[in-house]
Image (cartoon, rainbow, N blue to C red; front, side, top):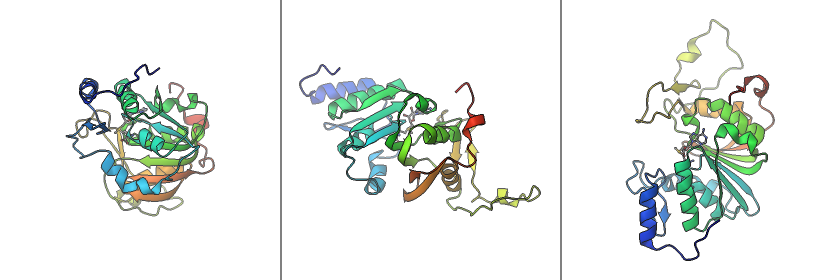
Length: 256
Ligand SMILES: C[S@@+](CC[C@H](N)C(=O)[O-])C[C@H]1O[C@@H](n2cnc3c(N)ncnc32)[C@H](O)[C@@H]1O
């Protein structure tokens, strides 16, 4: 329960921002920037400005699930668009603490839970809008995560973003290839996931980085129809029918 009744002073906000850092999201909390020296600039505001027009301006009455919400930039933006309910989940309690503080300063009523994307089945409801931004390449089991989102929480719109590396061209793959036909795999525009055994960008949580063809193919394979591609890394998708063939019955590891 929020016991504070007065707005926090700029000094208190600055002190709390310092105590909760380091931040990945550069938020503007009543004039205090949380990550002013972000290596991607004013992130994620610069990204958001490139695709915000493609999302519904009015989310009145809608429910939103923000998977990997970090400090809550997108959750707060969804609330600003009138969403009735925003649930942000993240596996990292430090980021959730940032999100809790940011939501308080912004007076945004957001529910936050520490939870992995692999646990979305435990939420027990579906959402009008699911945000799955900047998480896929942090996962050892990326397709499993997409399958679980499709199976358990996505009702209509999926807003997806992933870092991409490799070719930005997308080849039209055939329905099938003969066992002895190996040349498609040599093409840079064939769907590819680049496995990071060690580190990329100094981050040990980067595991599989798709090229553009793989990002799009994985979305389709998990049962999402791509309806818009407003920014290089961002896709708007509609939940389609069950993925074909249905991958869940025998591929979800018990341990997850
Ligand atoms: C690159 S940040 C992206 C944050 C935000 N969605 C955005 O697009 O700006 C990745 C976030 O995913 C979270 N994350 C990583 N693995 C996760 C998992 N298995 N389940 C839920 N969140 C995860 C991280 O803690 C981090 O907050």
